[in-house]
Every structure is written in structure tokens, then in C-alpha cells.
Image 1 (cartoon, rainbow, N blue to C red):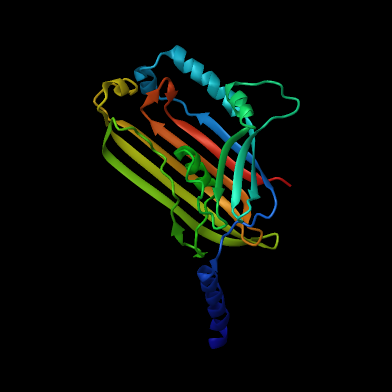
Image 2: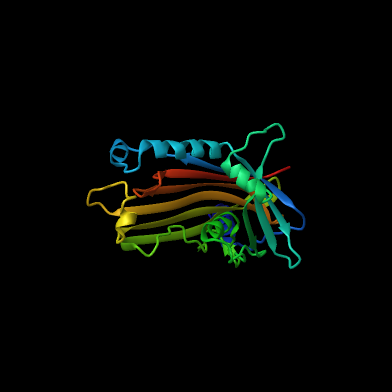
Length: 278
């Protein structure tokens, strides 16, 4: 009987040891690493009720819709490279095909800045160091390149330094919540390399009223319903522990709101994907 139980005991011990195994996730960037980058906006369809109650003229909405369609065709690449202190500099750039001679407002502005659309800096442990950039830029750097600053085991959770919903001083909130959860889901072996599988589940919500009548004009709903905004980000990423970089990052950020500024607002989805160039 003991001989029969021994294999099962060994399997259980092995599984428990794997679950308790801790890994130290660190960026190991010794040379320039280039990622093929997807950052694509998808404007979600409005409901019939939203369309009827939208306070912005269709002409203005049409202008922004045309601009949105131009943005969906843009191509990007992201470069990571070491700085003199051993930290990691990050630059996401607009990638222009040689055969493509077309240009829009966004690509024209990016061209004046060397085609850089996002810039940041993290430590090897993935801690955000570029505190001096605007909140939206810092959020993206944290979401795409942040790592746990201490060793983690399967099932361990941590949070990211992000603040995605932003209102001005005229907004008075009465309902709000925030979930900021990143988790080491699994450690697997792929092509002989140990891979950490990480899940992201981040959500922020606020609803209330604008005390400023001017700002209240931009609410899509003129009934007694509250103005609200909800931003969520869900992603799965795979990090090569030995090599020290993502081999895949795949995420979706959703924005839901009944607040629209100059026709640009409503529900929107942004797809993010990073894969190393070979």
C-alpha cells in the first residue's frame, strides 16, 4: 500500500514546490530591444439611446470619427535600451513604411518629435522612474513595462502606480471604486526557457455631477442620471525570466462614459500588443 501511495506523494510534493517557487522578474536590457507594437483604437458602437441623447452635433462627431479612422491605420514600434545608470529607457515611435507617403495630423505632429509618441524610464525591477511626464504617459509606461519590485510566487499579487480616470475640480463624485490587481498566474517552460505568465485586472470608476454648468453641457445624458466614467485594462503577458524581457504582451483597455468633449468621447477600446522583433 505504501509503495502505491509513494508516486502520488512525490507528485503532490513536486506540485507544491512549484507553486511555492519564487522568481525575480527583472529587465535585462544590454542592447537595444525592439518590439513590434500594436496600439489600435476601436470606437465601440453607441446604443440607440446614446445616439438620440448625444448633445454634440453629428457634423462634429463625423469629423472626429474620420480622425479616429486615420489613427487606426498607424503602425508603431517600441525600443528599449539601457541608460548609463543601468536603467531602461523606453521610446514608442510611429513607424512609417517607405512606400507610404500619406500623412495626417497625428503623424505630422509625431514627425516633428522624431516620430516618438511615448517615452519613459523604468528601473531593472520595473519601477517607474520617469515621474516627470504627464499622467497618461506614466500610466502607459507602468501598464506596459511595470514589474513586481520583489520576488513573487504563483498566485502572488501586486499593484501598479496608475491613475487612469481624471476629472477637474468642477466634478463632484458621489460613487467611486478602484481595483488594481496584477497577478503571477503561472510559471511554464517554453523552448527550454522559464516563462512567467502575468495577468492584469485594473479598473477605475467614478460617477457624480459637474458643478460647472459649462462642463455639464458635454454630458451626453440630459436626464437626472449621473455623469460617469469607467476605465478598465485587462491583459496577459509572458516574461522570459532568464532573458529578462516580454516575449508577449496582449491587452485591452476599455473606456465607458456618458461624457463627451467636442464629440470625442463615448465608449472606446484600445488594443495593445508587444512582440519582440526577430
